[in-house]
Length: 375
Image 1 (cartoon, rainbow, N blue to C red):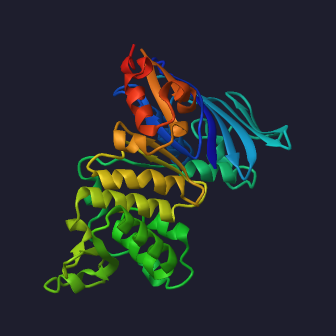
Image 2 (spheres, rainbow, N blue to C red):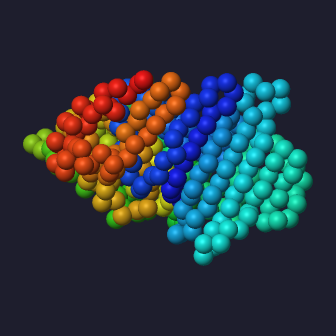
Image 3 (tube, rainbow, N blue to C red):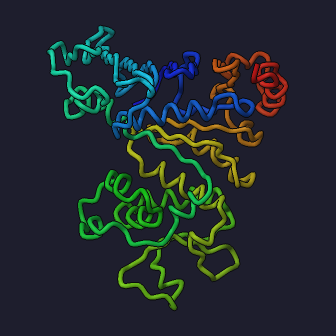
C-alpha cells in the first residue's frame, strides 16, 4: 500500500491541521525546527496503531491510498479523547474500479454498512478496517496500515534492540518454512536474531544487506553472523546466541554489534528493516542523520532511490549532506502558522532554487518560507 494523498485535522481542542499533500515512494520532510515534520510522522504512525492495534486516537483523517494500482479513499473521524463517550463518528472506504466508485464501508454513529449490507454497530472505538480485516476486500488496506513502522533513535533504543539474546524458540524449532514475514513480525525486537534467521534462510538477501552495509562503511572487510562464543570463548550460554559482527581492514579481531558505533548500529538496523519488511510497507525515520558521519549520510539517498522493493519511506532531516543528495522533487517543505501546518512541494520551488542540488539547498535555507518557518 502507498499513501498517495493525506489530510489531517486534530480534535479535542488542539485544532492542529495539515494542508492536503500528495506523497511519493520517497519523501524527505525539510524545514526549520518545530514546523510540524515530526508531528506529521507521529500522525501517520498513530493511525497505523489505531488500525492495527485498536489504539483509539482523536482526529479526522482523509487518505487516498494505492494498492496494486487500485485507488481507495478512506476517511475516519473520531471524537476527542476528553469527550464523555469518545467513539468513531464517521468512517468511509471507497474503492475505485476502472474509475467507478464502489462503497465498501459506510459508518456513522448510528449505522454500519459493509458492501451495502447493514451490520450491527459493533465496537464504536475500533476501526472498521480492523473489525473487517478478514474480508478479502478489506485485508490489503488493513495490512498496509499494520506495516507502518517508525524508527526513532533516542536514549537506549539502539542498545535495547542490539542486545544479545537467543532467537525466538518457535522459529528456531522450525528449520524449514520460515518466511520473511516470520522474521519481520516475530523477531523484530531482536536485531541479531533477525539477521541470524535472514542469513540462515535467505542467504542471498543477507549477502545483499551485508554488501550495502559495507558500501556505507568501506573500512569493513568482513561481516557475518556468528555465535557469541566464537568471538568470546570465555562466555558460556546454555543456548546458541547469534551476533552480527564485523572485521575491519587490517584487523583480525571480530567486533560484535554491541561494540559498533551508534551510527553503524543505526545503519545496520535501517538496512535490516528495509530488507525484511513486506512489500507495500510504510517506513518512518525521524532525523536520520543523527550520530552519522558524512559517508553514511550520503549513502542513504542513493540506496533508497534505487531500492527495488515497493516500500514507501518518510524521512525528516536538517542536514545539508542528506538534502543535497536527494532530488528537490522529493522535498516537502514545512511552514507553520500557529497550529496550521502548510506543506509545499520541492518541485514548486525548483524555478527559484535552481537545478544544482547544492545551490538548491543554499537557496532553500535562505528562502522566506524556510527562514520564516513559524509565523
